[in-house]
Amino acid sequence: MRLVLPEGTSILITGASSGIGRALALGLAAKRLRLYLTGRNATSLMEVVLRCREAGASGVSWGVADLATPKGVAQLFEDIQSSGTVISALVNNAGSGRFGNFASLEHEEIARMVHLLVVAPLLLAKKWLPDWQASRAGGVLQVASTGSFQPGPLTAVYYASKAFGLSWALALRHELRGSGVCVTVLCPGATLSQFSSRAGKSELPWARLPEFVARKALKAWFRGDHLVVPGWENRLLVTLSRLLPLSWVAFLASAGQKPAKKG
Ligand SMILES: NC(=O)c1ccc[n+]([C@@H]2O[C@H](COP(=O)([O-])OP(=O)(O)OC[C@H]3O[C@@H](n4cnc5c(N)ncnc54)[C@H](OP(=O)(O)O)[C@@H]3O)[C@@H](O)[C@H]2O)c1
Image: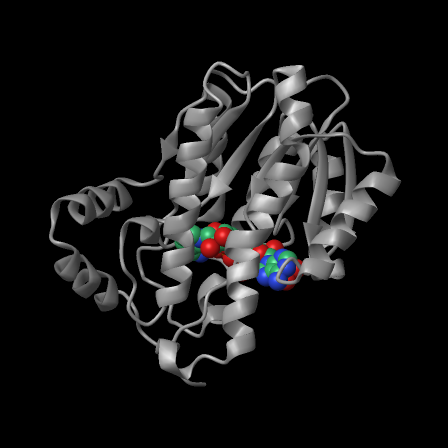
């Protein structure tokens, strides 16, 4: 089932201010679609808004929100409503991780990460799902990770949240069979963005460009695929992760986790 977007409606992209979200926004702008972009950094977000307008988007609205808190999600709902934007599709992309032992994480850090990666995506999808079902159109692009297939020592909460996203979105897709609503899961592997430096870990040398990831993701979403893993090395990793014992997979995942170099 292909992604159908009713005329005059917008695609909401979370985490549009940098990295993969920014590349997805520019890719959708080039398709002359209407967008609603959100992130926390207003300056970076405005830059993406301007680039999307230049790239040919039919319309671009935006709002700043911290999706790691219930207040931030409520703020986003309010801003979208007051802008008069009709959302017909959602890209659940905003995310950040944190390198370190689980025992070293603060309570607040854990709660924020789980809200951002688990709670907010569900609340956003739930908000508009009835409208999409009624119009038999629209959809969700859920940004998970190759880490969704692995237990991730030293980023345990992040990996577990990404496993949740994959499982939830594929189950939702099944529930929505024949409804006209299209759910696709994107599982990027290492991608060059601000993600690693923010998480406090070093960038992997084979990391892909966000534009490559976005191109593969949009092709798959518009075609109605259930899952897209950009890059042959990442598909190999996912295949191995599904075949090997989970204790080996955890070992494999830990090998890719190195703290950021100082200085
Ligand atoms: N890079 C990788 O290697 C990789 C691999 C697999 C999956 N992913 C996933 O891809 C997605 C995009 O990551 P990226 O690589 O593009 O990283 P990035 O460059 O750090 O971008 C992350 C985006 O999420 C937004 N964000 C972070 N915390 C937020 C919060 N509390 N509230 C609202 N927005 C927030 C950021 O907004 P501000 O900058 O405005 O704060 C930014 O727009 C994430 O879900 C990540 O888990 C990344």
